[in-house]
Image (tube, rainbow, N blue to C red; front, side):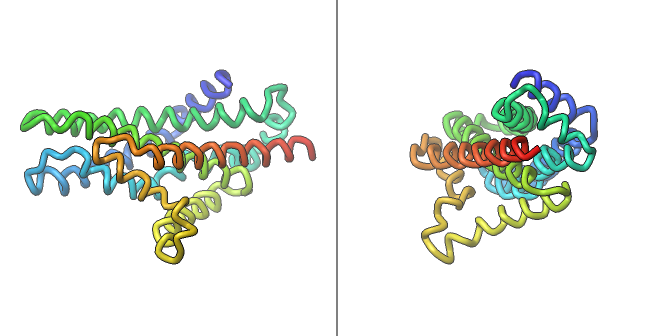
Length: 226
């Protein structure tokens, strides 16, 4: 898994993808920071993440659309499927490489925290839990995006489907309570209260695990067919 993780992580920064992801995210956070802090004179660091969490629906696909779809496009999927490494380690390697890029991106948001500290130190427990919740939400999004990439042949199609699915989760709970389990944004918001919401934490982790497992199953079946 470590070899795959290192290879995938390097690939994000040997191409524009990693830089585009970080740049777009920080540009959006800068706007949100101005709206939620500078413009109204607030020192609540967590307010920025209310908007940043929504933006994930549009920028996470930048990381995930290429994971497996690119292998098919470049004709390297055969090498992947015939690799002596298990699909478990390959999938987890790709997944955690994207998660690591997200962690680095999230660390950059501490720049805004430092700016707020110049005026008044924000509530640290709230800040820490907000960052943890945001990471768990990002991991859930990455797992789903990776799954979509594993079942599509085209990166752009993978990105479009992923974005559409994320946006759909905003409205499905309004249709029926049955869909509450996929309301990922709603599971993030309790973290901004500075506490550990057990139910939401378990739900986000379970969501991530589900789509990681589904991706492994899909790729294992492709390997057996090949």
